[in-house]
Amino acid sequence: MRTPGPSGFSSTRFFSSPGRICRALVLALLPLASVGAHAEPQRVWAAGAYSFSDELGGFRITSASGIGTKEDPLVITEELNSATPVTLTIRTTKPIQPFGTAGQFANGLMYMRVDVLNNSGQAWVEFQFELQEVLHRPSVFGDGLSFDQRNKTPDNIWSSSFSDFDRDFEPYDRLLFKSGKIDPLKTAKFNYLITDYTPRWTFYLVQDPRIPSS
Image (cartoon, rainbow, N blue to C red; front, side, top):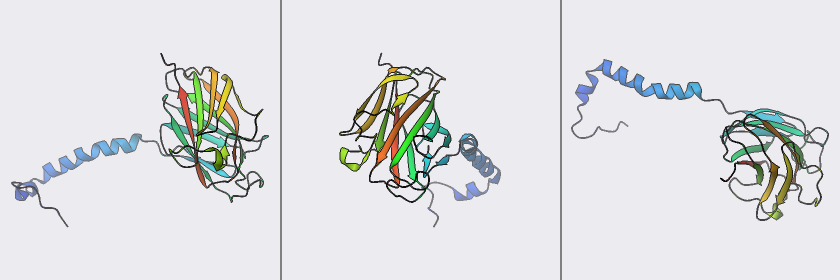
């Protein structure tokens, strides 16, 4: 159903000027065409029993590989263009089977390496990861998802750019790398183990680069 025009609007005058109509339509569509031409497609990368997506925006995945074992970790390569938090969406692509064979099943054990290119133009002095089972909701201690919370002395947490780290498990599951720096156009590597003893089909990894406070 067509909505009547506003009071005083001359439909006869409108339809008697086809050239003006065409020019108006072209001008209206030009910005949309420009956006479509420059917008990069969202990418979903598969590795092991999972897929990794930058669909929530703010960064770009450039590669993914590995199966998630200590010998062959899941390696996610990314480019961050600002010093603001971004969220990686992780989904299972194979059947869920706790402690099943890595690569064939989403088994709740994910040895990870995230390689992050700092393309923000600012140096980062800390870098934090946070796990969320539900987007924007803290992952609490009892949900089974964590940065290997059962291991009190982990030997698999490491970064090429930071010499120290802190882990928090309540009310968040967070891993903060500190005592270091990532300069612009430099890449930092982060290694850690994600455990999920009640595996879900989808969960999220928030990545938060920190800049100097003053």
